[in-house]
Length: 252
Image 1: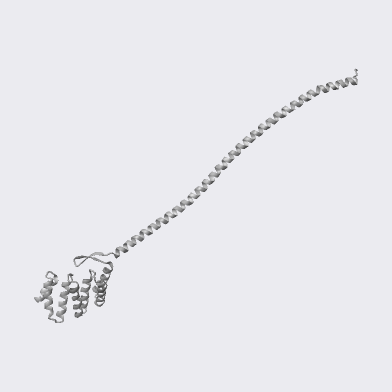
Image 2: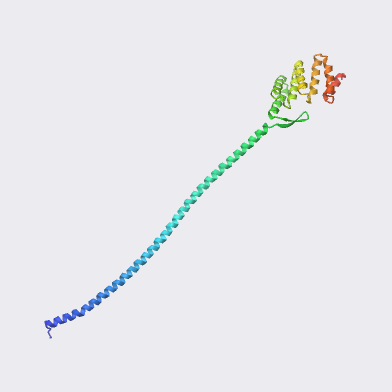
């Protein structure tokens, strides 16, 4: 068996070393390239993951923004609904207020109309009469027709004092005299009817007032009754009272 010397072993070892070194160097280079590729691959994966993560984040942000917008929209809708409810309440209150105002003005208008003079026909003549005058005169007439002549006399006397310029004043004065006559108070009746002739000579009640005066004078056996009847025929020749006066003078 061939033996190697130390120098041969040394040379072989050196050769082997020299041979291994390039292999180790190549292996080192190979390992470094693989590492680089792995690193590059890893970096690529990281970048890909980062891009995907950013995309997800962006998507999530968009979704969050959308959710925020949806949430804000819902809040806005709630506010709109709330405002709409308030508007409906206000509209209802305004409608009620307008109705109350309308009712108030209608009522006020009706009240004013009641206070406004009314056109009425008194003894065939048109006249403007205040509603209060109408009410008071009608009340006095109701008492007179009911046969309470004393109370009627008081009511007609009060009417003349309160409404001396009323279109019903002549009638009130006439019925005052008639109330006295109905109570058989001829003197008071004559005085009341004389005021009709003095204050309302153009009233359709004036001829009737003269006829009543004559009737009272006849009851009192006053000779002035004949002259009163003659004056009646002369002053109011076309009246129904004048016809009645002629009949009395002729004994009819």
